[in-house]
Image (tube, rainbow, N blue to C red):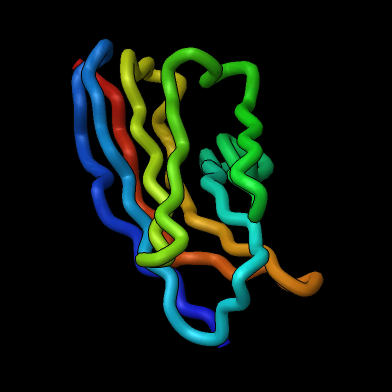
Length: 115
């Protein structure tokens, strides 16, 4: 089993920054993908950014140039640095770990961008 614990959400003004962190524990192999997704009530969950086992990253077009994902394999951490936040970034952000055909999810953390 895999456990994911997120931290770092909160309220920020437009143009501000937040950093989300996700710590993974449990039965984790060396090759796995981690990422961040977000969901607004009534909408489908959206992939924000992912980083593969080889370090390759992929970002949603809406966050390119503003968000940066980074992972620390030794510590089993994945961070999401979010800069120049916009009101449309408001959502519940969830950490994901994918290995051997199974998705694992954190509990989610609220990010609210508002003046």
